[in-house]
Every structure is written in C-alpha cells, then in structure tokens.
Length: 113
Length: 109
Image 1 (tube, rainbow over the protein chains, first blue to last red):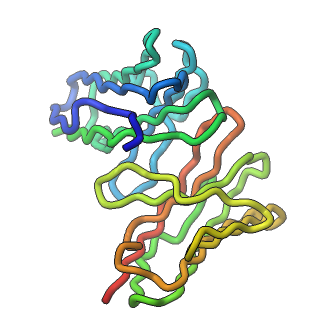
Image 2: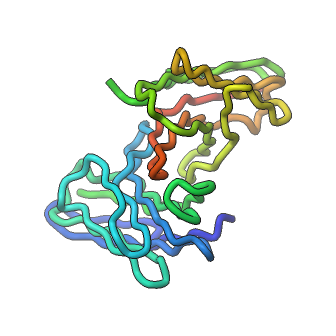
C-alpha cells in the first residue's frame, strides 16, 4: 500500500452536477498531483498542488479546480459535469515537485449519466 | 501528435516468451523516464526507471535512447502474472508526469 487514500471509491452523477473528490497524501509528502484516466487511455495531468498553491496545470477547463489543505490533503472539484468527465480520477503524492517517486492512490471512478 | 506514443497492442504471448514494448516521446526537454504497470481497474505502480545506460531488474530490462527519443522495455520469460497494461512515462522537472496510452500484455498458459 502507498499510504495515499482517495474517497469516494465510486461515484455516479448526472450532467450539470458538481462533484468533489478527496485525496490524503502519504505522510511527509507536500505535493499532490491529480490525473484523469479515461477508459483505454493513459492518465492525463490535471494540476499539481504544492504547499497549498497550484503549481502547474494541464489542458483542462476552469470548471476543474482544486484545493490543498495545511495537512497537504487535497480536493478536486468539477463543476457542470459533462458525460466525457466519466473517468478514473487519480491523485499522486510526492516529497516535492519533481522530487522522488509519485505514489498513486487507488482512484475514484466517476460515472456521469 | 501525442507527446508520448505507444502501441496499445494487445500483445498476446505464451508463458516463457520474451516480449518488447517501445515508446517514443516528442519533447527533447523531457527530464526523466519510467515504466509503470497498471492492473485492470487499479492505480499505476512504478515498475522501473529508465536510464541511457540501460537498467535491469530481474526479468525486466529498460533502455533509453535520447538521440532517437525512444524508450524500450523487454520482459524475458513471461509469467501469467505479467499480464497488465504497461505505461511509458516522461517526467518534467516540475514533477508533471506525461503518460503514453499504455500497452496491454496478455500472457497465456
């Protein structure tokens, strides 16, 4: 086990709704990255948080937003859900940006109907 | 064009076979290179880092060719438990990981 946890495990929402996904980083890790993995594709980088600030963002619209808390846990929020948002959402934590291995959590599987 | 490209397969091989996966990347400024393994409906897990000098971990050998922007993974003596998706990954200096689509391997008895 990596020590990175995510909740919930599965989630079903309808188009237009909003969702919040949560991630607890491994002890001692201050950097959390979020990835979206659609079926049959590799994970795609959404954004990274380092010491409570966004530290890089991939090609995702502003309705994807995030937060990092003082204990370095993190949230991913998605507004105005679309069918194409159905995917496995993964978070990964590291000691610092570009430092050491990224340890992934088990993911949250989001289905948008 | 995707920054990291892999043949998605699937590769169907018998137990004991040797199988090779290849990957190309387009950004010469890429910093570090890895192979990850992902089992069905699970999170990716680091298999091994990839270096220009080549590196080996048991039955697995990885190689990086910076001039050709090409990464390879060789699996010898395939086991049933090697069945998974293998993801080629480039890491930027910020820590951002760029994943290929993944190559699916199915090892059959």
